[in-house]
Image (cartoon, rainbow, N blue to C red):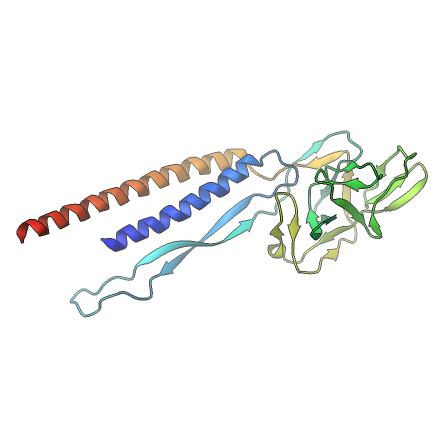
Length: 245
């Protein structure tokens, strides 16, 4: 009976964490460049605390645990914004930005121009080219991005936006909602495909996430009911045993 309570509790804990993950996905449905999270589950078999001396030995107790969170790196939809500083990547690749914590990687191409003429993210992170941050002169008003990432103004070329890729995207860890970090070395994308005047939105699917939220809520309520009934059985058993003595 104690095992039933512990197994139910393990399921409750994982359901609660998955509810948090789904709620975070829903909250970022309109966040540019956001990547949805998925919780990974596996079975854990209890290796000890079993009795084999009886005619019917104890069955192995199995718990559910969530050892890791997986990031869904599928591309999100494109929205045309008509903003020259918005840039989206078609296909593989990520932008490289300079942050106070070092270089980070993102698919969020909602850029802007700061007071120093640098192209930055909404958080102020500098967009990097093959030669460093992209900086415009104060008198330059025309900002154009070619399909290969080449940045130009009315005064000429200002660099080429750095676009990189990773052989295994599982090495990327979230460092905020829109940036990723890793110790692995990125590889340059030889022929990137950039679209100016567009931004990639979140890859969260609202209908799927809301449906999943309902399923998890019902499962949590069901497990809670089972645990409550198990506790009632335990209480009844103790009362009857006490009465016979």
